[in-house]
Image (tube, rainbow, N blue to C red; front, top):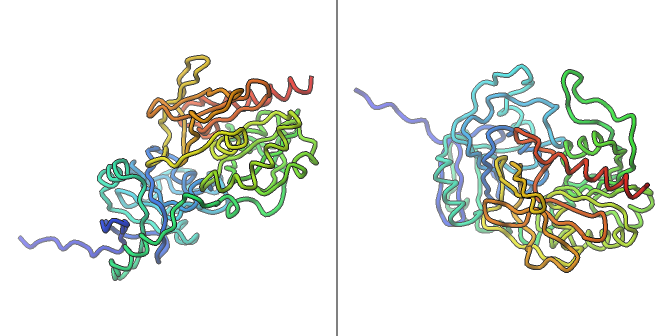
Length: 385
């Protein structure tokens, strides 16, 4: 019996240590360099690719069925994909979902994002967990012609995320209002018409569903760029200030974000932060952040609220963490990861100010953490009473 000829690889992933994974390319052609992470979520690949927190990263999906429900405009977390590329086990099948408006491969190609399928993602994930998030080069060439030595060299030349402020690259160019609420059957997304509170949201790379959650909690939301000053924020006469998620090294973004936060804290305005916003708040209060080995990326992360003992299943996406050992007096640790004990939440003891590392808007199956938006609204109710 004649041997079945294997198709020639049309994509490859080169790690800085010289390891190379071959596969079949889809999406855009070309080459890109980034940090490689893995995400364990079983759904939400479109939301993950359009999450601005993934700037500078290529995502390995541990769940093999990626692309099976296609893509649609309603599920974008921002206008275009922000993650630099994707790595999957199986090539995407034809979409099988009534909401699908486009195939994943076509969507990626139109937006300049490279993807590789047919990769042993289990082996790759184990390597990331053991050795840390590597720097990589991802290439897609339909003819299968690759300069492997050059790709490895370019992977080694990637500057990494430490010390890099990436929020400037994903923030809004100018301020805008947001009134769209969370999706609900059968109306879909409806507009906020009965806001109780004026909230300024600082956009370090804000996901749309966070803004929707604020609107659904009764907030009239004004979004300001990441570089907004305390004077810019306070000029809006906000009842509360929200600090969004975002990419990059929090210490680098903190160069301009920390002075703004400290200026607002002097006015005792209620404040709530998520993800990078959590890290920004911690830095402003005097704590420190640190780079993690491979970070937390997925929708199955157990987090314990220390004051109640309640355990929540959460969605996470971060490669840096707040060092709880550096929290100053007057700042309490409120949440911890049950995977590794890392910090997942803080609050001030004398001000209505708190933040969490995880994403309460992401709804990873249940909505365990949505109460945090209601807690923020309640803090503004109390402040204005």
